[in-house]
Length: 288
Image 1 (cartoon, rainbow, N blue to C red):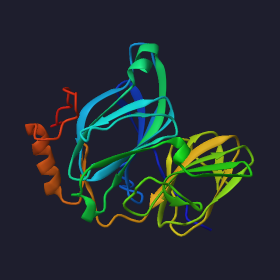
Image 2: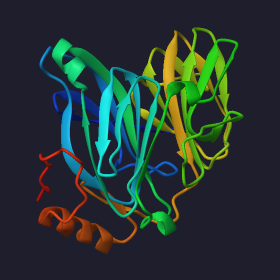
Image 3: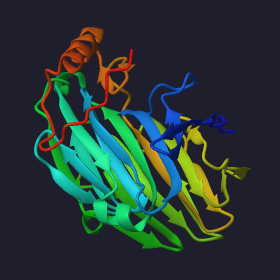
Image 4: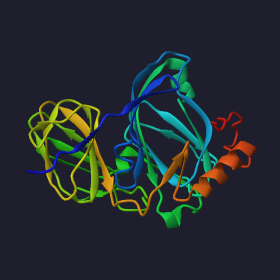
């Protein structure tokens, strides 16, 4: 009999009026492959005149990946990027030695009212890449590979898996896929990577004949194939990859293998010694 998955109950957070379920980091599991942060932004309806507005904030040592299920986000960063992100797109920012960005509801949707629902994850950079130059790329939904068979639709968001390869320029072995199953369909989850985790977004499903809990991160046993079965139409994501090349420290928006890098970043942000997002003047203060 295969070992049981480790079930992580996300903690609830509030961000700009949105309810967030944060599954990583957790005391039970600090990372899954390169993934060190996993936020599920629950579906939120914004009235006219309202929306998400996250002012300038910094990052080091990681890549952020935003994947929307509903709504739109305007991404702007200190590299000069200004990108509208739509459902199914990938917004990919690699912070390297330091970047700042803002995320907000586009003005047209703020005026009319809108709904936002999506996922944001952080991937720790390999140690030799932590000091690299920052970069940004946007990947439209139409550019992401997918397969459809026997009631199962797989979209590969990032990395490689299920005989697909995403164009997102990951820096270490990575798996991130959107799985949509109609009622009665099944999907084998092969052990393509040493570390994997499954998150059921909607619907009812079984994992190896056991109920898969809704909106919990199930860390799958290494080296085992599990069978994911849809009891109703359902949607899930699977994340994973190679283990990190050493422990990572996390402090606010900073990730690094060396705590000195985090302290340097904190001091620089507090002193205003940081690349600015063009046209932006509001910035989030360093928390104490």
